[in-house]
Length: 498
Image 1 (tube, helix red, strand yellow):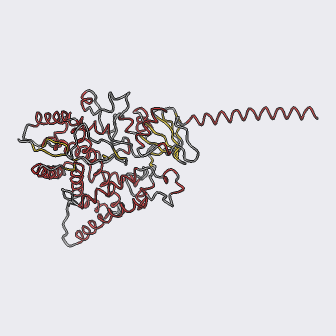
Image 2 (cartoon, rainbow, N blue to C red; image 1 turned 90 degrees about the vertical axis):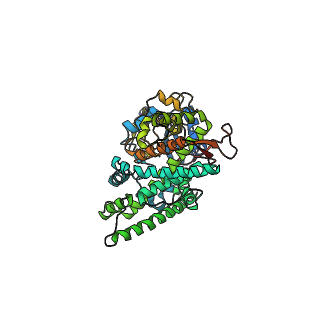
Image 3 (tube, rainbow, N blue to C red; image 1 turned 120 degrees about the vertical axis):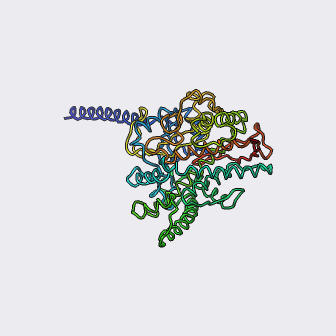
């Protein structure tokens, strides 16, 4: 029996070694299924490598680890994409799997994630809210009907700039555009202004609320890396967001209550604005009152912030490069003449103005909103597990030297040689995203940015205020869901003689 026992033991050991080798090999292969990335620290993972400007930090890491890399952010696995090829696979090949949302804990304030067209999963409710956006505000017919309103609001901005010009006074460019866009959206939705120009306290209050929302939503939050901590909200981000949320909802509720009372009166008149259309949907039970409030929250935060920051960055770059501002003005004078105001229908005739906007969107966007893998998916030869967070680093893609020559330079002329659209089909430049979650407000944003910027260039020459020069301008940015200038842009409008 002794030899048999020894033989059995040797066989067992041999089989054990084979199984151990196979298990080790499988483990290594499994580890390789995710893209490469920086070595994580115990517990924290790669959180400390994000810093205060994650778009810059992740761009540097991508140069070391490749255009698709894995990070361990606490207990969350994240894949960061920094190339057009990987972005194309996300939005074209795997959009149906990568259409989920990783919800920042701050946006759970007020249960916003349960009603928001931005954060809801791709569900029947989400489709209904997107349909309401498209039909009630962003359809071609609606945009044509509200074109006169947009022109009127731009004219009000120009009147304010003319007053400042007559006084030789520097204007806070971002604040002036912010107030104008705020009132445009308020008139489109409620048929009223919510602020006035010239450092109006109401306008400043709204700016602070909306910037607070974008800052809290974009700032790294420990609860997002360790979801088990969300109940205690260790950084207080959700608590602060709840304060911003409640302030905006209080304004909406006051206006909606007054409109509801007016509609209930015998012979009550209609304003034929977006609010009346949304209340009609509410009367038919397609939208709840909560849905309407949260939809308005999304509309104001996204619509006002992104438009005014894009125009402010564009004006800053044009003031650094006055020859490019002169070139844009000369194009408008050649195409439109000396006395014709730029209109939305003129935008396709102004390729250099379009090139300026494209160049700003290439240079000054950080990330698309994070997505989530709804199931395991192949991405660029790697296996991405279910529930992995997927981040698209627009900053890195916009400054990729393999795609863009002199990528850090402001050169609108590059687009005279490149046929690149910004509507989600050319993956070198996808400022509005792509696929089924492309920004529903893109048609309005596209018109507004070109109309505002073109009108400001056409009507005024500009000089820097506060003693700045093109050589000494501070072009640093502060991080949020959108990038804002660290220092507001002050410039003196000089009315052009026509």
